[in-house]
Length: 465
Image (tube, rainbow, N blue to C red; front, side, top):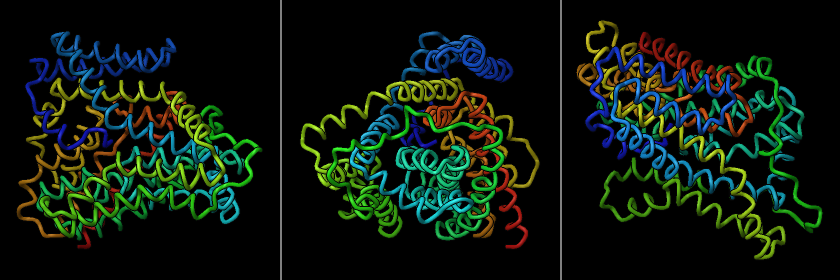
């Protein structure tokens, strides 16, 4: 996930918190993950406590100094909450404004009127892919969740039938398509052409998102047949509202952060001069924090005031929006803490050392290295950057198209099997009201399908180009 910024990744290259050998470190990783899974599934312990204990167990098994393990965990928790937590909070406020003003009803009623039955999963994957094009995964999640839950509830659809296509659209965009951070850094590391990578990425993304979204959702809905969690469903606005926002105003408010981030991405590509005044302005207004904050402020007028809200009612809506997400923030933060403990223990470096002597095709090598680092650290961005750095020498003699395909192969590998060390795993679990086994059977399997299917299409393209 993108909860680790590129700047943080530079800080990851510090001295490991343990001097354990690779064998001991590998055992420690498996033991730490096993502790988390057992505490949650067998002892029914809260995920926040389980992740905290699992992180300390990992450090102990690896022979790390307890004080350094605690520092790594708290640093990871803090940085995740600072990055993702603020976005979740702003998304919750925007979602509550949408719900209380009747704006969410307008969106859902329009979607249900225009698409129904078998067309609904396709409509959701299309909407999510468009929204996810310029957005960080976490931002797309908080924007899409109210719509997904309401559509599932009002249309009497299986939550997985609607939710999986939306998640697939967001995830594929995040892993394969610039201007997301991972693909952009890989393009730079491998000297690939951005335009060619973008074009080939779209070619790979379209069939991948269809297979992992609408097609897989049929099976996911059978494996995990659950309803939308009541506590997360935006409630119908009270009947005392005289009016509700128009569909156009509501849609414009939701898409405002999408547009701001897309403008930033386009300016970064076209101008590409950090000292340019226009780029400096768009870098600010197109950052996830400012873009979502702008949507919240605009929403107070286009949604709240449009529905006749007083200042007191607006303040009450904001206050009520934050209470339900306290548990989610702690769990996602603890997931980030566990991930940082893994990284600081030197797990990424261990994977790189193992892979140095692998004699396999470059595209497959890049994918496998990214998969290994993703499984070990839980971070798609760390996996992309580490794998791209390792296979960069192989791209020197490649054609333009094959260098672009190598970027995509690394990005595909970075999405493989999200599990308990990924903050995104906990984000999806909590929003959709699933337990750990259910999340693995749906979200984790969907991520694996995206990774494998996209690799298959990348290898096919390599034979043609």
